Length: 376
Image (cartoon, rainbow, N blue to C red; front, top):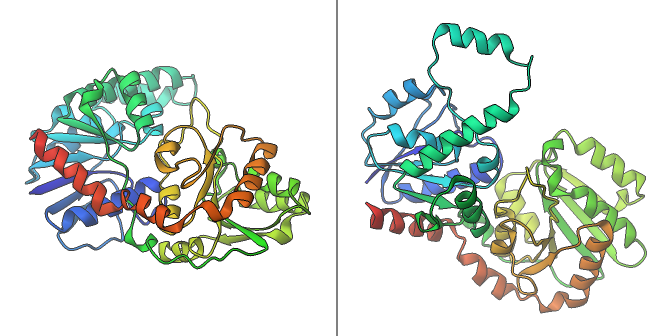
């Protein structure tokens, strides 16, 4: 089959959506010809994958280009891109993640020159946020209803998509984003007097829901009670504040900011720690649709401490592959760390790995293609 994928989330940019796109194209290319259509360049080179940075972000221009492509089906990898479905000649399937449903991007409509000048004149002079978001959601709804089928990254996202866009639940299939084989490796950590925590996250102000602040404050509360070593992987414009906070809390000697690491380096760090820590602090406008990092941790034999919110319960089973918290205050996180330390030996690495096998990229891609073939 010739499969076209429409996405603007590609490596070398980092993040869960980019990793999902990478692993999906690699797995599809093992059995199919894959064409990636995007507005951006990528450094990826994969056999049977053609990368075409052919899209402009203007709907009419893009549709003309896409309908010339020799593909059998299209897969769009964000909610906003689903709006192309009603204009494409070939069957189209959409994949949605969570926040892309709440704040969808949209290709620009083709506007007359006078309308373009009006939009440029008023941009930034009036508050158009409400009307713009409403217009974008309308276009996403039209696109999703025009698809042959929609995939969601979790049961939470499936429910969100159905409720927000009035899409019947039987038209939405949960297929988790698949994780790379590099995370399935032996776990080297051993029970010791030091509790070794690790977090992988963008350290950006815009990603503050990841709540590294809360973990640092919990570590400060446990000082003198539990000997903790905390490794933080990632970089961004909030890193300096987090380093200053660790110093202010007098836990800087217990915290290592490791910077931006490759996937292989991240896998190695995961395999040498005791617990993955990401206690997300969500809001109505910023949700955690799934959380690939929890599945990656489980594949490395590492349990997680996380929040019982959004799509996270798909990735973490409380008491089996980690601990889910309802109280995400510093005190609540500290209590969760106490619970883990007390029950640490109960978290079995073989159970974690078996659970994580269901999230392998090959397994998730197979489920997606089985669904697509049944709907064609």
